[in-house]
Length: 174
Image 1 (tube, rainbow, N blue to C red):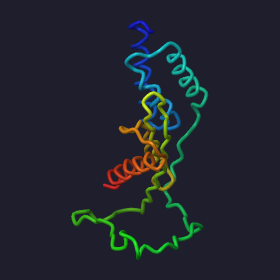
Image 2 (image 1 turned 30 degrees about the horizontal axis):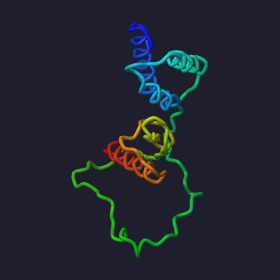
Image 3 (image 1 turned 180 degrees about the vertical axis):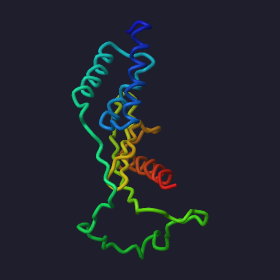
Image 4 (image 1 turned 180 degrees about the horizontal axis):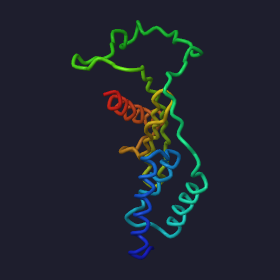
């Protein structure tokens, strides 16, 4: 158990590391998500783990985010050959709002990568969602969070992660 002063140091360090994530250090988001679940009552050794993350940031302070304004080339990816004619999705269309402003400037391609880690938290059994968004190959946002529900299969946890990802893509698109 920590003293009250050490708990405040732990919480302050978590807050500082979350700011580091928001300004572009996406590589520590999963670790900070795990460590932030112990903010109320950190255990012995967890403050040392946070200090190791800070040490990693100090050693890798020259890492940079590359901005790529050009649209990525996806000509090497083949089009899907599956036919959706005999499924429930055969008549679906993209929802385009009438009040969208006309596009200006260059095209932007949103690329999203996601994964769900089943049984990330062994105590509660909750999986962890990890999502990474890129605009034309430039990293824009990273998201890492425990899911609200306990899933029993990898499919269920990935489905919840895909739903969260699509909500974020709609938000980013708007």
